[in-house]
Length: 253
Ligand SMILES: *[C@@H]1O[C@H](CO)[C@@H](O)[C@H](O)[C@H]1NC(C)=O
Ligand SMILES: *[C@@H]1O[C@H](CO)[C@@H](O)[C@H](O)[C@H]1NC(C)=O
Ligand SMILES: *[C@@H]1O[C@H](CO)[C@@H](O)[C@H](O)[C@H]1NC(C)=O
Image (cartoon, rainbow, N blue to C red; front, top):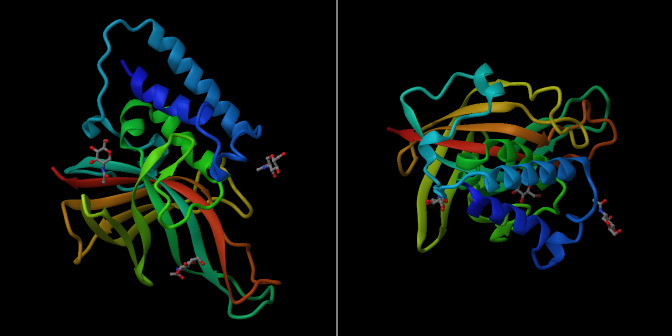
């Protein structure tokens, strides 16, 4: 059964040493309350399972059902799942209501949530809503609550149309680079965590030249926040919006 990883989740939320990161996580929020209640449900269920066997095998990982609105991952296998936390960047040509913000990229830390996605897809879907409320991590910050998961890589834009996922973090963790191109998108579901101006779209990206490793596609799902205001009224020429999302990496089978 899944108790060990469950305890990792639970311990990280409830027992972790307070750090600057954890100051706010003890505050009540509906998202956190929902997460706690799911964790305790899993703990209760775990009591009645007799034979412990827990793994992080990614082969059982599936996208959340709402992602069926995007082209599916056919002929590829799930590799990793990351919780992303960072900013979406925008520019405004002027500060009037006649101008619309233009997306110019993103910068996010990626945290390795593969084991959670493999064992607890229901918790996985809740993580971005909680991570959104955690202060923006430093570029090098190595673990993220609420699940105390390790830094797995960085997401940024190689150029204006090439979202890059660089999974080389330390000399011993060289997992390659996914260079991608946007193929399709769908609006976030109506119950997505909106942040200030709404949740960014869900995305299907396919890999392009420059990719290092077996990566074939990346899906951005379970988005929280990240959208800009509807117009540039009162906005500076460049600004960022906080967001969080789950990224699913698929590779050649
Ligand atoms: C959490 O509580 C602390 C202390 O009361 C407060 O300073 C902080 O602003 C709160 N954070 C949120 C996200 O509500
Ligand atoms: C996005 O904003 C962050 C934070 O200000 C910045 O470090 C990063 O370089 C920006 N990326 C782009 C593509 O503008
Ligand atoms: C993510 O975590 C899993 C389980 O610990 C591990 O097997 C995998 O190599 C990690 N992936 C990356 C890119 O760090």
